[in-house]
Every structure is written in structure tokens, then in C-alpha cells.
Length: 70
Image 1 (cartoon, rainbow, N blue to C red):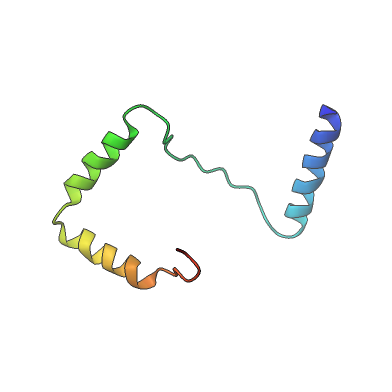
Image 2: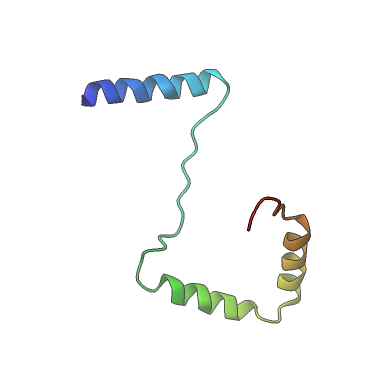
């Protein structure tokens, strides 16, 4: 079974490459890690009152497409 799964994955990836796509690996913070929420809060508090942060938040609010979201 493992060989067939591996072959299917290789075939799928080859098809994606053939269509002009390439794989990209992205590492993101582990939200399950101890202290993650506290670090998010710490960093957020550092930005409180920052003019650039307000400008960025306003831009995100204006640019965001929330149609269909509840």
C-alpha cells in the first residue's frame, strides 16, 4: 500500500509541476506550543498605540474581502 501511495503522490506532484506550479515549504509558528498565546499577547501589547500599526490595521480593514463570512 505504501508504494502505491508514494507513486500516487509522485504522479500528483508531477502533474502540478507540468501545469506550471512548484512546491513551496512554509514554516509557521506552532500554535499548540506552550507560551504561544502569551507571546502573541506580549507582541500585541507592544504595538498598542503605534501609529504604523493603526495605519496597517485600517488598510487591512479596507482591503479585506469578508463577503460570505459570518
